Length: 72
Image (cartoon, rainbow, N blue to C red; front, side):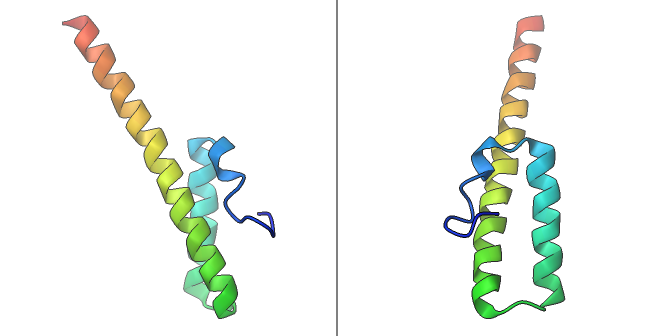
C-alpha cells in the first residue's frame, strides 16, 4: 500500500491478489487496533479492492455468457 494514494496499485491486481488483500483489510478493521485515520484509509482501500473483485467477476461472467452464446 502506498502512503500517497492507498488505491493506486489496485487496478493492476489479479482477482486473487485483490481478494486476499481485501481479507487482510477486513481483518485489520475488525481487530480495531488502528487509529481513526488508519481505519478510514483501510476502508477506502477495502472499497476499491471490492470494486476490483467485482470487475473481475463481471468480466468472467461476460466471457462465460459469450461462450454459451457461441455454442448455441
